[in-house]
Image 1 (cartoon, one colour):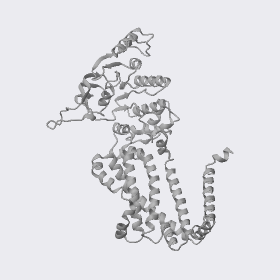
Image 2 (image 1 turned 60 degrees about the horizontal axis):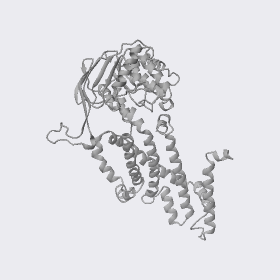
Image 3 (image 1 turned 90 degrees about the vertical axis):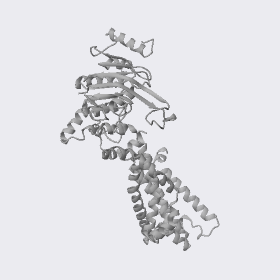
Image 4 (image 1 turned 60 degrees about the vertical axis):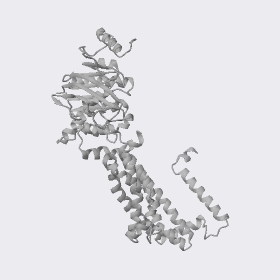
Length: 265
Length: 256
């Protein structure tokens, strides 16, 4: 479960400021079309952690939103576990770029969102507690999101996502806005979660180090319109280090070059 | 010294004392007769008379009753309509122009029609208060619902919320901070209108007390009515403000 195939995916946006459509062919777009994704073909295995890199504004978030069912592709299809995707579902949970905990609910109530349907209320309580402890937020069950730090909010959101027991997790820039230590800690947490639960996780990021340290597979997209520049399996032992692993370090230099940076550290 | 100043009631107390002092000076040296411009002492003595013989309580209860009924009716109809307008584009396109057309018509302009339709008594006053509160509530609820962060609706879709759950778990809590602010403003408007309505259509209430006292040329009673209206307005506003301190609403004043 969690096997994803993306076939000939294409996405165009119509620039709303110059919206023009031909009267004869209402589906034909003659205004200022912006091609965002151009012929994307990818395949992700079950249980794989895939990191998607690309220059800013290239459409990597759009790609993730389409795979999650929040956005419709212009052409092509996304097939998850043999079924063509139709819309969002709790089998695939999206962890948003900005804090998406519901601010009017406590941590506990937020984590409970995905467990609403459970018949056995005792078991539900246990599961909520289990997931809160998993992200080390015990003692903050009855806090509201505004009472938590940025890192704690992200961890709470991760707990909420994992509590549903989804096949797939989508993370859009999960570390933006965190300070350095919170960033490192959250990254460690995601890697640990992945080793423990073996879920398919798609992470969109602009941080090359994050992508190489975390991913089982790395996908590099080009600038707009995005096409796949690189999709490579990362077979490096964990925990990974650029200093100890020269091959990883070499790959990092290549990725930097691919994204147009010549003087990589 | 700073300790006294920082006490919550100290500075407002000073402000009210200053007003009383200016009032006293004006009353004493303006040259107007005591019947035209009574000073604070007379007004407080007559206020005590009105309290003692129960007149004031009767009129206050009458006014508050009308405001309560009209205001609740406006909440009951206005907020659900606002949610519909905020969520469904078709409803918005259909109804919004009508609402924006009716909204600027002052509730006072409805007085002749409301008297004709509902006669004399509570009904026309309640109708006017309803009109005065209904439109502001509809418009603010619509805006509040529309400005809920769209990411929360994505979360709802992601966690398979039903339409009912979207309303109870996203729309209502999400709009609440702004709607409470709107309630605060609207109850003040309703309170303004009740006094105006009572001057025309009824034989009780604080508005009637003021009008009746003017006809009897007892200006001290007029001022009593004004003072009570002010005090109750202050209390109503305070009661509404307390709503926004409820914990699950507090995020709205904190995080934005």
